[in-house]
Length: 451
Ligand code: ASP
Image 1 (cartoon, rainbow, N blue to C red):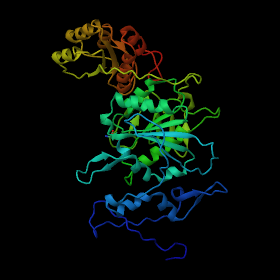
Image 2 (image 1 turned 45 degrees about the vertical axis):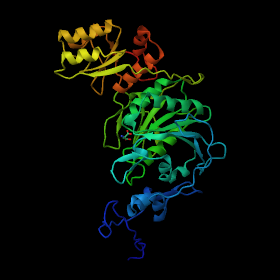
Image 3 (image 1 turned 90 degrees about the horizontal axis):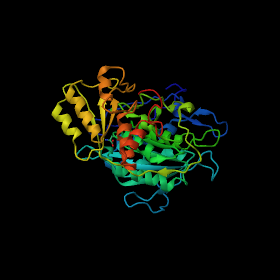
Image 4 (image 1 turned 90 degrees about the vertical axis):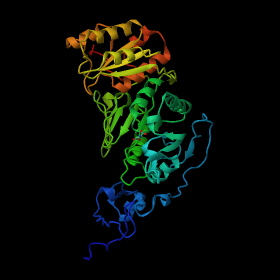
């Protein structure tokens, strides 16, 4: 070789499934650049480092060479157990994360609440499906947590779940953990499957009244143990956001938010829009609370500014006697009638076309009218991802609004259904539910227009 190039460092990188001797061989040619840089502790500048630095920070490269069962390594970062939690949640595992820059006693403290989801899943070697794993798996795959200037405590569900199994009981558990640890922590990171993340974020936003600390929900599209995982960056960025303060010394984010890939979104404005892209969430009616690039750029004007003086008051009540009817051309009268006559149902979200329109068949209008007269709260939201219900715009929408249906304005489906659950969880007074349904509780809907 020429003298200006180090001798090649040969290391085997194999596929997870390939047979010995049949593995592809790839050579990484490392030339420098930010990817392999490290901060010089004295000058604080980024300097190119040797290639070991890169490998040391991506231990998962070694997974390519091992059968999965042997990929586990021991990381002794779980120190002592303390506190009594509800029986369905493991005791918080306190583990010290050492600081590079902070002074002892001055580091922010963030609690991770691990509920399950892909971020902590592993492949079942027999069925080849992803199954929830225990939290140790997550920690051992993110050695970089030690580099953060944050004290971290963690609480995990005893049985981590795929978020498709998430239900209001789980929301109450998460809220309880936050309530119990609220005074001790600066912020919270909830690790959650992506499938129902927007529902959990919306529900928690209504439940945690008076919240003035960050509750950042994140997850990933690929398991954290996967070589190409997005989970590691999401977890680390979520921790940084959950510990960020503004120049007044208050927590920067004081609401429930979803951090995913390049953006921080208001939780009750978010929707999962992709089952494949790393950028899996969007908020089509509200701007990003922060964008993630070289730095974390907060959009301070759009962050919620809750009253700093009030205490956290958790509203645990949730009533699940609610449902969503998604209209489609050709929807049958007998189907709609059965839905509106579902025993026990107290509130119905109708997802209408465009700006709040529906079929002008007399039977359709009559079914809604009768449901309203029976005391069912019927809320009109749009199937469109962007924009809001504007029932006066077309005759097809006006007819619906004359029945006494209330406008859900620009609510997402997730925010609308969880808001109904929350409101009926507090009161059975239908007029009170209707009144509050059209007013924002915590930034989930526009405060004016859209009627
Ligand atoms: N099915 C998984 C879940 O929601 C998907 C994910 O985590 O992204 O738990």
